[in-house]
Length: 183
Image (cartoon, rainbow, N blue to C red):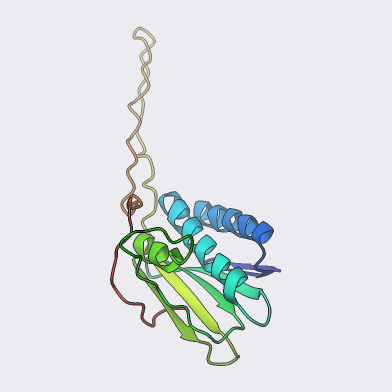
């Protein structure tokens, strides 16, 4: 089920691998609608990691709710599930040979903030991350005067830059701890 408001979108689903791709597309479409294209890759990676954790660890079921909200210049993506166990961010070993356990470190690396807390009104938890929302600047309006005697030349197109588009690190070794926050 998808519920959508002007600055809020909620999707209820079973956290199965096939559904994770669908949620990534919904998140991407919502961010495009809000003109926040530079955040798409980071938001998609973050929600993939959170849903993968639900798929791998949540008990007794894989039913969850994904919310994306734009408020006060910040996009917050949260995943609610019925498992009360809070996730633990693991430090990567010096060898870096683990095949799992890096998801929350990735979420931390691509987001401005993240956290987890127990739900107040139901069993379970919410894990969230937030990104600073910087809309894609609109092209400036320009008046064009056409002289029939001179060749027409298109005005230069503005170069769009992403204010909040940090590249993914080659190796994640961030040590900030998760806290409580929006969600």
